[in-house]
Image 1 (cartoon, rainbow, N blue to C red):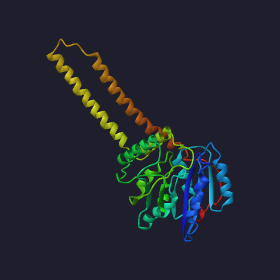
Image 2: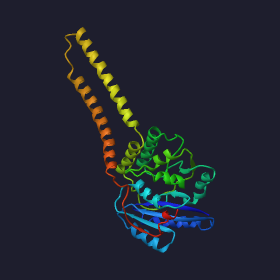
Image 3: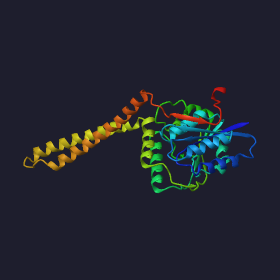
Image 4: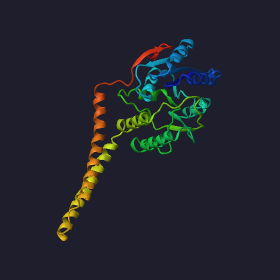
Length: 315
């Protein structure tokens, strides 16, 4: 008998998480060949979602509720959930009801066909324009910096095999980027087409700042390509500066009466100065994250766990 682990990070979802869990129960109620557990993580949400999760965990034997002491981002919350998952297959989904749980068996089918990860692909994402733009930027970043196949689309509804989860958990540094960890763990990843739903209630808790932090996590934790780009940009800028200086000298020789151009010099200085500051900031981002990692900054801090007994030691 196979066991499924559903991992659900929760933030501002006191009005939606019950519906999500009820649908999981409904989808699996006639599948006697599967056991399943639900691991819901309160990512230090400002609403009463922890009260809801705690009561659910006390009422149902297959639900585990984890309360994080501090909000460190969705991917950190997912890492906390993975650390408690004991299923043969781990399914991640959102807490807002947008993930089509009724298509679960379509999502799991590729894993029976030899794939290690199956990810839902939505032809049309039902979210605000800002998030659509952010998703496209994140997709381009993943293709260029962490070598994501162009035809592979990332989403929040996916299923992974247990060995992938164990490999992901080997990453102990702060600022985890789960998609990057997947891509470096296996190449056997398949998209499954399905339609994304509308949110049950409320609005997304993913702000511009949170999206920017996730984007920074992706390219600073799993790639040195930005540093190489900085090197190339620095070399190219230096070459332009040399050619411009050579041009000024020649112009002065052939046209000695031409006055030096204050505007052009200022423009060049501002351009080169901007490039230097950008590259220094990029290097500083890397150095800062190295420093934080050396200080053993935690991915997450668990305040309380309610529900299933921790079975990790029984494996």
